[in-house]
Image (cartoon, rainbow, N blue to C red; front, side, top):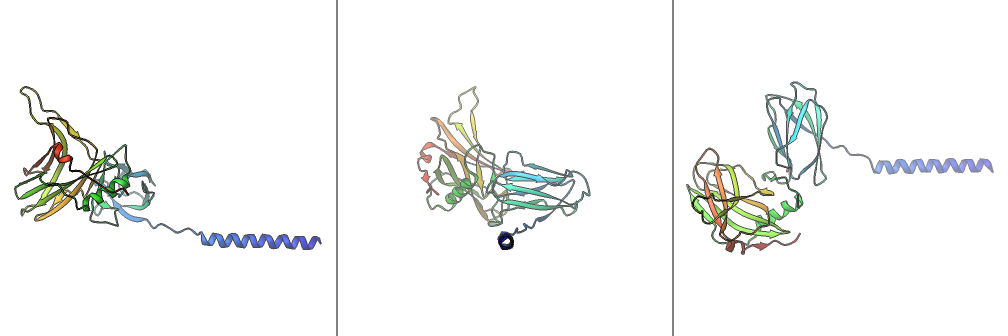
Length: 281
């Protein structure tokens, strides 16, 4: 009787081990292949991610890593010493995705500017540091605003073979989305220095300065730095909801880098009432 019980126990153990081995084979790990990245000592490598960076881990103190100042989805990397031993870098973004990089030293052929937005490689998006809102929502609603057929009239300026046109204002979840088209009909490419939003007094009283209230965007879709000759780009700026006080107006100002082809649009409250509500996601 004792022999039978021992044999039964042995069989049970073997069955359990077999089941565990089978379950383990089903749940086997799959390796994430790291991207190879060359960095230098005297050059900075910039990497743009589609969502905000939540965690960064460097494999060695021989490399320097930081977030770009005021931005949530760009990191800057450079070597802390020349000819360092190859190491790794791990980045986790707000959408829960893990990025792995194998870093090697190569001063002459260092990678300089990279985008991890592999699904839409032609978009360059910048995510500013914000205390509210969700990064993914800002991106998705910006895209809805980009393709929405609703338009507003007016709000444009044309000079120097360039055209600056505010052709859509949208809102959802207390965030406003300004769709702005920049068309370059000239033979000279346009390098964007800055795109400013600010509220200004309608009239400047003598001996007093005109007060300007700067409005910082939460997110910019299609944030291209250059508008090529005979081409155009449509930006979408996401900003916290606001209205314009009496005797003031909103200024949209486009400044050219190392040039004088500056364009300005003035927007009053009557234009804001044309705002379109984006459908909820």
